[in-house]
Image (cartoon, rainbow, N blue to C red; front, side, top):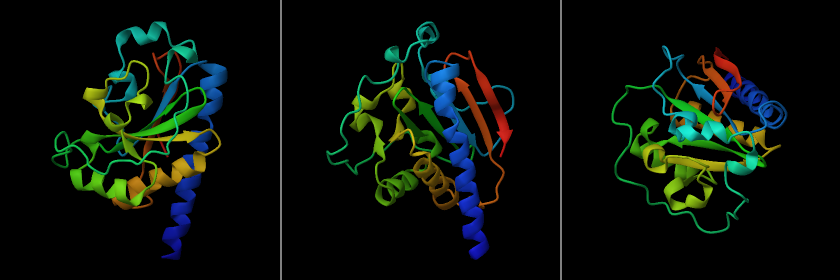
Length: 207
């Protein structure tokens, strides 16, 4: 058990290091929103995940040079109650398809997204009860990112401020190792790039 906790702490630190590097990439290299995906598999070709970049409108590429044209304009308060009712359709139906967690990095904050089609319904219910701060995007549409296909994407989302990458890494460890029950030493793959494809850093590199 001690070895498990040590390995889990190591993976959390590993996740946090990857997330921490995205602030500089978004603000000083891409000068616009970026995303990062952690996946159980390295997909063939382009992969079949519904990434945030794929769910955005094609014309986004022409406007992503400025943060003010992407994301929400201000940080709404999170003091209203979060409904526990969740949709009855659109959930993962079988063991096909890759499990993955994705993040979007905006000007003043970043967020975690767990698309509904990568969760079984009972997993969505469990996550909403066991982890604070998660909400279903349709319940709080003010957190919709610029150009995002809400109806086709429909993620569970949680907002973090820069500097809180450790907390985000802990949430991701909960999803992979507790909710999805992956062994803590499972190989995972990370992809990071700017929206629009102008900058491409990790390309499903193993971690």
